[in-house]
Image (tube, rainbow, N blue to C red; front, side, top):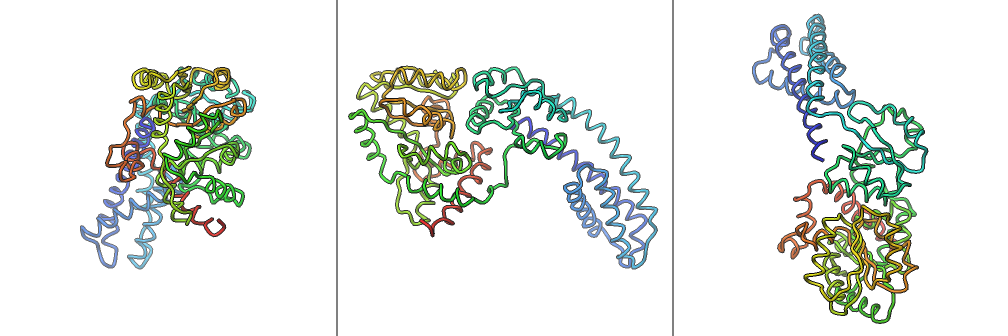
Length: 476
């Protein structure tokens, strides 16, 4: 996010500047006092190399020890020993002691000055903490150690409903999401991203029970870049997902759905890419949805197609979710079917209403509800009573699929599909990748280039997914 990126850039620049200052002071002292004492005195190139070594070693000690004062002392001790080796005897230590003392005093005052500048440039954030199934008093006690730039001003339980949490978010500068169900977390995080609201995720509450809360750091994701290795149970689930992937074309899928509409049957469609399936492995409720007998999992993403091919599962055809959503709306227009749209922001939903009026006039739009103002259960109860022929839910993976699954049995008929960010594209609020990228299956690259924040998600989903599919190839 821009706010955190600016803070990180400021801290990095200040750290580099102070490190360079310490390095320059070391070179000055070493050139005047210690260089003449070495067996082979250094000239300009040697001083440059010593300066570079000093910076590298300082960076390592800063990473290991934190702060600035302790790392500079450790670096000076190291270079004193190096100087002794270069001189073949113990050189006087007073010069390095004087250098270290001056470094520490100067750094102390510089840090105070830069902290004051930091306070002016980056004012204190007034944060809302959204928590799960724990008492507010317990949460307050455990977060009491969070000070400085992360002042928790208000608390709200997710049990009060997403819509109430989202209303509370508007009154704060930033949001902390603490130990709440993943489907709620994803909806709230997506809303905050749309509104450019700084959002932080904390470790699960169990982490607080074993560590001092003041020592915990805010972070934006769990695990290493490529995630933890899968358990045996997860690999078994992944194998189940792969066997459920629809192997036909977009045209055959359309015919299948059309037949279901004609015969009054229900269809629950999940548009899957590697990130979708990896979400299933990490979310128990979504895992059961993906493996549910009624669900029809279609391949939306070239990463999924390539992985299936590499693992020897045969040839699959990519069926983009946004394209299939268009086909469903066209079907509704041709047949005069009823449509219920749920999810995305009010601005996007307004665009979808306009789209239905202009391009799909013969379809019956029962309602179009944004994903933030009303309780999801309330919206689904309304949909059940209206009995739509087609229902599209755009709450993000896996929240949309879990919600559909929860109410699927209560519908007598209809085509149900989670469409993620398709409403943004269909309504014209977000541009899809240019034709060149679509024709060459490079839409993923276009998204990374236009939204660099996606690169971490790409590594944690696509790359990890391909690795895991290759691992289970032998048992398929």
